[in-house]
Structures are given as structure tokens and as C-alpha cells.
Figure 1: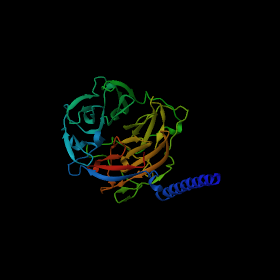
Figure 2: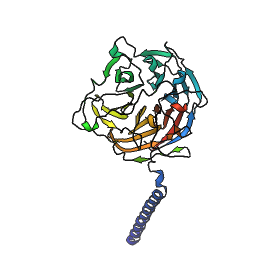
Figure 3: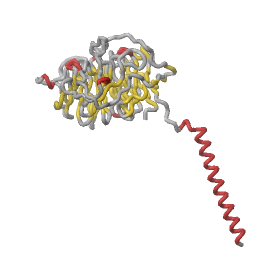
Figure 4: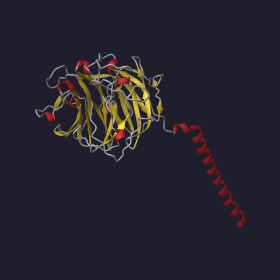
Length: 391
């Protein structure tokens, strides 16, 4: 009886081995045939919607995603804020031209923040920041002060990081920092910013003449555009990519003189770094959280991946998105360690068509990181993109 039992055990072992081999082969075949479904898609942007074309927008300079992907548009030329849903449906509007609370003079930027959510509007012409509920009811304002050192002057940005509020104080070429309640905390300018990088990374002044990003609402300063961006096909914006020689930056230990802001217009934040878009320098300046200068991203110019009068910037998941205003295209830097550029992309081309930009001012990314909104200022519209391959 021993032989039959032994034979039965062998048969069972062979059967189990056969099942394992079949499973392994099936998995290998599945991966070979369907492996593309498991690969991370290449980084790209796809235009899915144009917002505001039928709502008489005039020079929209700012756009911000709120909760539920609602979109707040700073309609600068009409001195109002217009709220849309992600599908482009109109929800409400508020504001008129003026100096009283709830009124605006050349508003340039919006940010949604907090719980409960509050909408912060950069009222540049009145040199203040106003705070509203999502329904447009006024809450508070800050930035106005009798102390010249604490007052805003033609601000262009407001953002939130490290339990503070940051404002790009473009009229004074510095950065203002506030507590969450709007109380003044600190001012960072040429006299207070510390050096901390190699001299080669110090940002030289752009020889091009550059004023503020917007001479007046809906009448942004024009500039020539040399060097095409990516080609467009089927609504999907194709962008070129490369190592972006001359656009990389890295931190070193050699000290330099403090960097002099020429026209700081926008700020982005990662966990470790602060990125400041300087309109006249045509560079993105990089600082650590203590405001020590680390280096710069991008080189001034109008070809390849160069920057020319950049305005709005956003950092998300290792990518730095830049509204390359002077060239009417979107430039995206893929970063390593928060400051080293490892790849660069250009999206869009100058023009007035569906897939073109005409001096886009500011950008915003939804909380879930799926959507990018671009304030296409001189085309009087907001462009909504899906982001692929950035997670």
C-alpha cells in the first residue's frame, strides 16, 4: 500500500506545481499585454473647458479653486469677483469699482483658504487684502496701516504657509508676512533677506524694460514673443521637454549678498521652500523657510524654456507651474529636492485660439491636484486643464 500512497502524493505535488506555473505565466502575459495600464502616464495637460466666454469677463487677472472645485475669478476690468462651478456654470458675483469695503480698484488675485472657507482678494489699487465668505459677504480687511513699514503698496499676491499669510508687496519690492488674523508679523525685503548660495546663482537684473504685470485691468503690458511653445493637437496641449540647461539651480554653502527684489509678484510654497516669481528679474527665486536665499530657477529670455516676465506660480507634487506671462505660454519645472530642475516643459503657444494664451497672469491647482485653471487675461477667459502624470 505504500507505493500507491507515494504516487498519489507525487501526483498532487505535480498538480500544484502545474497550477503555480500556469499562474506565473498568466501574470507575465497579463503584464506584457496590459502593462501600459500600470505605468505612470507621461506628464501632460489637456484642455477640457473654457470658462467665462459668455460672461463678459474683462482682463481676468486671477483665478482660485475653492472647495468642491468651485472657481473664483478676479475679473479685474469689471472690478468684481465671479464664482463658477467646475463645469463653467455661473453661481454668483460681487463687487464694484470703489474704495469702500466690498469694492475694488484693480483687483489682481484671489485665494480660497480656511475652515470655514474664506476668499482672500488682493485689492491692488486700494493697497489692501479683503476677506469674504464664499457667498460674497464681507468679513474683514488688512494691509492698511499708518506705519509705512507695515502698509501694503500695490500687492499682487496672497498665500498661506507655515501658519502665516504671505503677500507679494510689489509696489515696495518686498514680501509682507502676517499672522492668520491679518496682524502684521514681518517684512522681508532687500535689507532683511539673508544670503546663502553661490554667487553664480545670484539673479541679475533683466535688461528688458518691465513694469508691473498689469498696467491697468484688462490692458496688460504687451511684449514680443519669440520661441514657440509646444504644439497643440485635439485639445491636448503637447509640450516639449528637456534637461533645461541653464535653468537648474542648487544650494551651496558660499554666501552672497542679499538678493534684491525687482518686482516680486507671486509666491509658491513646498514643505521646505518658498518660491518667489520676480517679474523684472524674469526668474523664480528660491528660499528656505527661514528666508535664506537658496538659488534661482529659470533663465531670462524668450526662447526654449526661458522665462520672460513670469507672474503666477504654483507648486504641487514636485512640479513648479509658471505663468510665463511675457511669452504667453505655461512653463513647468519638474524639481528634485525642491530646487534642482530635472525636466522642463512648455505648454501652449501665443494667440487667440482655443489652445492659445494671450498674456496669462495667474494660475491655480485644485485641492485634489487634478485640475489646473489659467487666467488667460488678454483673451478674457479662464482655461481649465486636466493634469496627467504629476502624482
